[in-house]
Length: 508
Ligand code: FAD
Ligand code: DLZ
Ligand code: SF4
Image 1: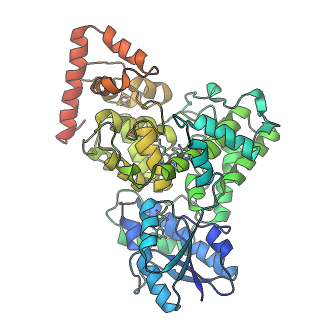
Image 2: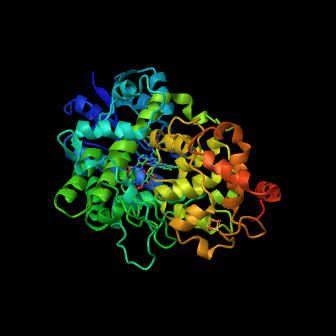
Image 3: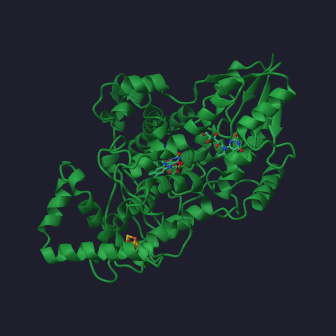
């Protein structure tokens, strides 16, 4: 009997375990653009277009390599609408009940595959450096899971930037040399743009007509949609941006959405690039004297450290992770996240860039949109849905621990030991947003006080019981307690006033 070999939209890798296990001569690769995947959150149109164009090109590539591919387009008349329904349809067509699949990156889809009345073989996703079993073994018995220690183990395992059993340069982590603000007057080359081709054009037309109301601008479409293009994007990063990646990785500029970031998360997550090849290219650039150690180490840590750690947490913590709400936050997501007007220049830029590009870099996600949602007490499930929808690189295994854990502290401290909150001063230090803002970042109270300044204290005081004992936060509480009482009362009352305006849908 033939196997149906399921290849999902984020499994576009020639060395996928399901393909490695299948027989090219007899088995049928099943790929399907389906309404259920395209609409379970209101994905950014660029994310849908990227997925469909990359799926179509990967299917064509498999066919060229001799695979038989049963591909369903979104607008095919027989489209059954969901991945399980498509598998059932193909099972009947090819008279088989055998399915070979690589584990999806989302509990929802894993459960759905197990429920199909077909014989399913689910294989491990071998495109990661750490297996579930290895992560579980590492996590076993630890009081707290900290990325830094996990990262060191993966450095040792891969040998990346190692001299024997010692880290190159004598230190594991060079973040101390990073975190510089960037200068706005420099010309930086943006990542290479997508070339127009028939497949992409058809997909753009399809997405335009089927998802006209989704938040996000579809054209101009800038992403690469096949492996060759993804490799070009990687080359561009290594040549033009990696040398400065470390120093400026936390910087934000209104007119430069990419700065020195790689903009390869979507290619890695869809399977067009592999984590190890990307890190080896970066290590090679260091070896050739093209990029300094602080940049190369910092970049490699994001991929073999954070990316693998975050995935480990998602699968360790289980399907209920996305519904956690340790801080009991329940405010609705403000309309400004979906493009509603705001006078807060940092949010206007971070959201505007997200709408136009389906991309924002880490510090914009963490310290602008994430920070504001956390300070304002937004329901983490709403925040999670927003992030899953709006970024081209968003899949639940990587998005949820970053949002529910790192950004919203809704997991109670699994991913981070303290919440990432800051007043406006941090944003002012790392960006040029404040200069063009209606609010004044230096004002702590009063009609033009930066909302981050007000909400920062509001957050700390409403969660005092939970955080006052945290040694990394004690200083913040001491600062608040040293303010005179009238000032403390004013700050909290103005923060309440701001939140009332936000809830009433007024311009903030
Ligand atoms: P660079 O800054 O150039 O970093 C290089 C690579 O490192 C990235 O491509 C990515 O693969 C990896 N990386 C860096 N940080 C992380 C991290 N925290 N977790 C996992 N991988 C990391 N990343 C996603 O891939 N998908 C998401 O849905 C996602 N959601 C996020 C939500 C929030 C609230 C936060 C704070 C972070 C999120 N991240 C997510 C992590 C990070 O912001 C993105 O990976 C990064 O911005 C992608 O852009 P880049 O390729 O230019 O990354
Ligand atoms: C993101 C996405 C979208 C928009 N559409 C499809 C699709 O039509 N078919 C498909 O196989 N995959 C799609 N994907 C990616 C899946 O949602 C992804 O495989 C799961 O969320 C697991 O990570
Ligand atoms: Fe954002 Fe406050 Fe700066 Fe305005 S003043 S850009 S709201 S941090």
